[in-house]
Length: 278
Image 1 (cartoon, helix red, strand yellow):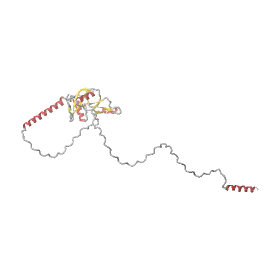
Image 2 (cartoon, helix red, strand yellow):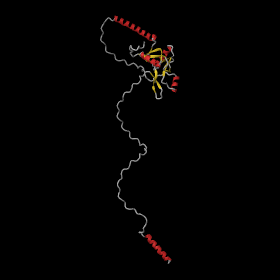
Image 3 (tube, helix red, strand yellow):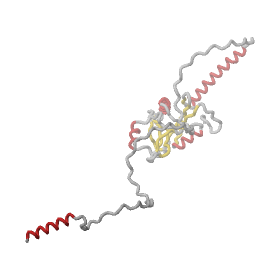
Image 4 (cartoon, one colour):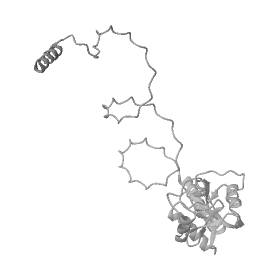
C-alpha cells in the first residue's frame, strides 16, 4: 500500500512539472509602443575646458604692401665724413673766342695792390682773433674763453647773447683743442655745453649736449666719473666741467666758473646781441 501511494505521488509530480500552463509570478514584456515626439532643445551647457592646440594651418598668401608711413623726426647731425678721392679729369672744353686787345698793365697793378691789401687785412684779422681776443678755431667753428665767473644757466645765456652756445666738444680733436685753450689761459676747469635731459623712468637724468644730441659719438669722462656714474647716476642738478687735462667731471650747476662759447662759421650773425666781439 505504501509503495502504491509513492508511485501515485511521483506520477502526479511529473505531470505537474511537464504542464505548460503552470502559473508563475514572472511578468512578460508587452509589445513595443509608438515612437514619441521629439522634445524641446535643452539649455546650453557649461563651457568645457580648452582642448589641446590644433596643428598649424597652411601658410596664407602674402598680403598687399601697405601705404608709406609718416616721415619720422630728423635725427642728430652726424660727424663730418672723410674727404673722398678726387674724380677723373673731364674732357677739355671748346676753344674760346679770341679776346680783345687792351692796355691792361695799369689794371694789373691795381689788382696786385688789392691782393697785397687783402693779405694785410687777413693777417690783421687773424692777429685780432688769435692774439687780442684769444679765439681758437677749427674748420667749422670759433671758440672763445669767457673769463667771467657765472653759474651754468647764466653762462649758457651769455653765450646765446653773443650769438653762440656753450662749447660742445663732440670729437677728441675738439676736446683737446679746448683743453689746451684752458691750460694756456692758466685755468684748471671751465663749463662746457653738456647738461641733463628729461627724467628717465628711474628718476635720474642722462647727460646730453646743449643742442640735445646724445653723447654716443664722444665723451671724455674720467675713470672716477665713470665708476661713480655706475654706482649713482647723475642727479638733476648735475652739470659738466672740462678740466685742463682734457677729462670731464660732474659739477653742481650753481657753482660759478669761467666757460667757453662756440660760434659756427657758416652762420651770419647780425648786429643785434653784440656778437662774438662784444
